Length: 376
Image 1: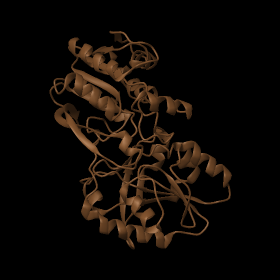
Image 2: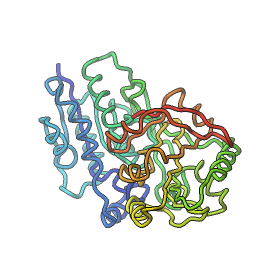
Image 3: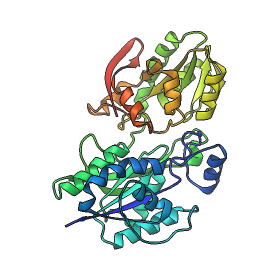
């Protein structure tokens, strides 16, 4: 018997990332993102996952919503979906996501697949709670929730195994989390647990929910910051990424940093704050003879170094700076929180993700480094 798969795409998810808006929730932010030149993220991410499923199309019935909420992506991926419901094309809302989830639940889907970020996960939870098995294709800016696969290709593998191994793939509950984006834009992070949903789980394929900073990390963060300052070179531009560990570097420099943004530092002074992708690329173009380096940390428990909350560091930026000029910093507590799993990259460019794989040095204190593996 064919498995019934539901598909919902949030067409605006993730658009605020590269333009430095730290989210995409709300019409005002969406319009601002468009004005800054943002382009849709979720259609491409959805197609990356769905294109792998064409080989099992004879084993599934795919149900989705019209136009940009799933129909377009399914057809582009070579699938033949059954389209239900209705939307106002080009003007989708969170309410459309909720209605789509409820309508797809009525069709009796075995697995509900959705593309988006934490806001999308909240909408799905509001609609179906934990009654359905779900899996998210990650396309949001931050993604604190644990209901997502680690990447679009890993989402495809979970879907395929769910179809091919009925009753054998493990199911578990995962957290639906979200943060207040208005507080984020004031450099304050306030995460909240909204509930739980059931997901198919296989080690290495799912994204963990984000762990907050441990207050006991402050002493280690100060040591790391001292090491970074000790090794800072004159006339080099450092792109300091988001996070509490990188903020410790800015604090030790005695300059104001952007907690969830990208700041450019040269000769221990901020020369440009809260840069989006275009701003970084412009800076690179204006300083063609100046060396650049990226200072970046890891997300606790999740393991991401690129692709979550720092999309301003786009594939174009990373390639321009160079893999060899990435400085990784993290407390030992963050490393232990990964339980032996590697660092992760999900830049939106699978070829670059492969290039970033391998072993890297990560600074964990003054004069202390560990060797850690990076995986796509």
